[in-house]
Image 1 (cartoon, one colour):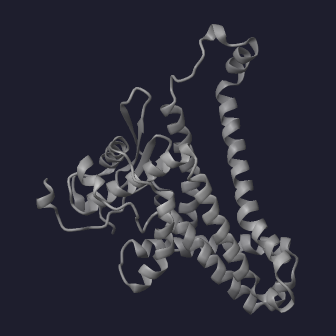
Image 2 (tube, helix red, strand yellow):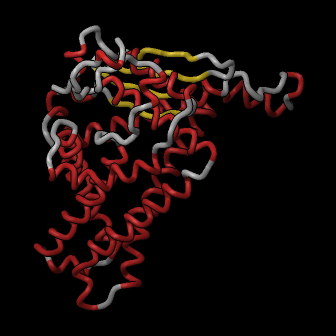
Image 3 (cartoon, helix red, strand yellow):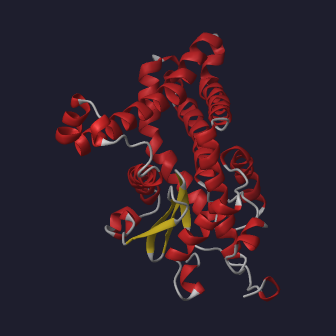
Amino acid sequence: MSEEKKCAYHKTSVGGQALIEGIMMRGPRGAAMSVRLPDGTIETEYKDVKPWREKNKFFALPLVRGIVGFVESLVTGYGYLMESAEKSTRGLENPPEEEMSKLDKWIEAHFGEKMMNAVGVISAVLGFALAFVLFMWLPAFAVDKLTFGHLLKFHPLFEGIIRIIIFVSYLAIVSRMKEIKRVFMYHGAEHKSIFCYENGLELTVENVRKQIRFHPRCGTSFMFVMILLSILLSSAVVLIFPSLAEVKRIIWIGIKLLILPLVMGIGYEFIRYAGRHENVLVKVLSAPGLWMQRITTQEPTDDIIEVGIEALKAVLTDNPEDDMIK
C-alpha cells in the first residue's frame, strides 16, 4: 500500500510500552515484545495473554477497569521491562568462568535466578517508596511549611501544584540520562508506529518517521490526568468536610490513598473517552499530557523505528476493522 493509496483514518485499540532496547505492543491478538539484540537483529516474541478485565466480568466494569488496568500495567509492564533488559544485554560483559571468584561461582550456583528475582522485588519496592515520598509525602510536608491559617482549606490545590512541579522536574531530569533518553526514543517509535497504522499507511520506516509522536492514549497523559483529578477530588472532599483541613498530614495522606482508586478509575475513563472523541473539552483536558510527551518521547532513529514496526505487526489482525476501537 503506498502513501497515495492510504485508507481512511481510524483509531485502533492497540497500545504499547517502551522497554529497554525494545517495545511491547498489545492488541486484539494479545501482546508482543520486540527487542534489538546485541548482534543487531530484532527478536519478536508473541505473548498469548488476555487482559485481566477479560478474565472476570467485574474487572470490566466502568471505573473498576481503570484500577485493574493500572495495576496490571505495573505488574506486567515491570516483567516486560526486566525481560527486555535481559535480552538486550545477553552475552555482554559476562566474564569467563575461570575469571569468576569462588564467591561469584557459589552465588551463581545457589542463588542465580533467585537473586535476580530478589533484586527485582527490592527495586520495585524502592521505586514505590520513592514515588510515595516524592508525590505524596513531600507535597503535603511542603504545604505544612508554606501555608498559614485560613489558607489551609486550599491545601489540596497547593499540594497539587507542588506535585505537578515535582513530576515535571523529575521527568525533565531523568530524561537527560543517556539510558532513559533512549527508552524515550523507543516510546516515540511506539506512538509513531501506531499513528502510521491509524492513518492507513504501510508500516515502513519512511512512513512511520513522518508521524507525530504525541498520542492522546499515552500513559503520560493518564498520569497527568490523574494528578489533575486528584486536585479536584481532594479539594471537593475538603470543601465538603472542612475539618479535614486541620487533620495531621499523615492522616490526610491516608485519605489521599483511599481516594486514589477513584482517581485511577475516572482517569482511565477519560483517557478511554479521549481516544474515541475529538472535541474542545477533550483537547483542553488532554493538552497538558500531550505537552508532557515532549519530555517522555523523543524522535527515534530508523533502527528504533524498525523495532516499533515489528512489535506492532505482531499484534495486528488480518482485518483492520478488528483492530479498531470498539
